[in-house]
Amino acid sequence: MKRWLSMIDSTVLSMAGMRFLSATIELTAAIIMLCLNDVKKAVAVNAMLAIVGPIIFIVTMTIGLLSVSDELSFSKLFWIALGVGLILVGIYK
Image 1 (cartoon, rainbow, N blue to C red):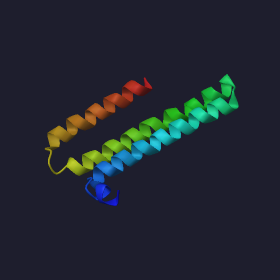
Image 2: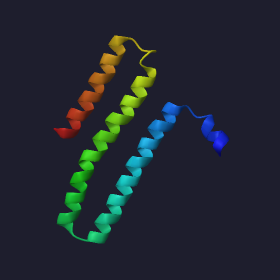
Image 3: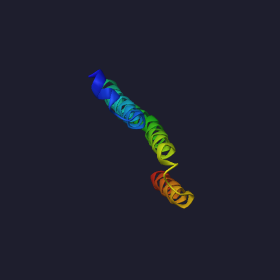
Image 4: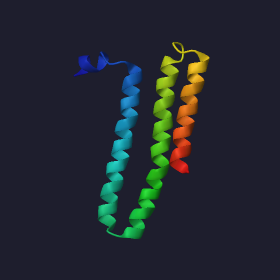
């Protein structure tokens, strides 16, 4: 197992780790909702998840973009950043 992990790019491992963290938070929230068994409290838990999702998305994209930034031109990085910004606008509007 240790040998398998050493073959994976550290950036990819970091990005996957962030997604595992996100999945763990989501699963924990689902279990909390089931334990609370109240719609109002479940909506409050879900509202907290609305903050976590975009943060994980931004961090994961930042890790990936920092890794490939030396391979991309400034104009391509601009378009990628604009696309990420539009995704966030779409989420919050």
